Image (cartoon, rainbow, N blue to C red; front, side, top):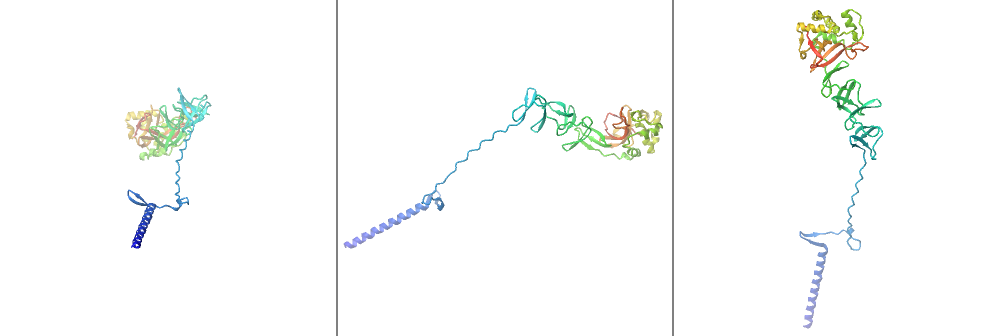
Length: 362
């Protein structure tokens, strides 16, 4: 009986011991591989590379943020400064320039006078070349307005005074001798007609067809002739004298009418003087009411300028312009010139006050 009780007691103890061991093992495994979170169990894996080889987890090294690089020191620049009424050029080193000469600052060009003051509001010369500086001292370039007129200075600031075409910002302009740009007017270069708008931008005008006038056909063939010998000698039957001492604009008009076979249309004007004399044409128009509205002019009409100072032929109208062919005209037809005038093509606004009127001798 005693041995039976001892055996039961021993079995009970062994069972309790086994349960304890199993319970401890299970708890240890759960603690080692699982982690509780509000959302449930999260599996975590430990890489073999994160240990130190001795079963200890490696310590994560966290780099500190790098310190911001210091801002670079500002680079000194040249500048234009104002002292009182005058402007000066201050170099990058902080020195005021006192030696005469050109300087460039912020893309603009200036001229420093000896002593340091910058030229302002002046037209001045350096080595025989002309320049212009505005009120801030900036050297003018391109097309600009100066005292009511337009001018052109090249990219270096040199003022153009020679006659000719220039191009600026894609537009074409024409500079007269002396420097002024033609604006709001018509003109002729090498006997080709052009017109300039209010800012000087130039467009080429077409040459009129002459409205079918045979007089214009004759005159066109004479454009470019540099002497009036033919016309003067034909009309006056006398020796031709060069230059303005022999005005031949009227003789040219009469010659063209004669060559076209229409001379009889103007011979009546001889009642008022020779056809080589401009007032003869005006007196004829007054007497026979031959004046017409300028805007109605057409090829073959006679055009009178000033106070009966000059006469020519109308070639036609293009837009707002009357295009003419004139004898004894052009740059050589001036007092004191040693060369005679020429037969040239000219262009005038219809409203030009130089035009006295238009005569149609029909």
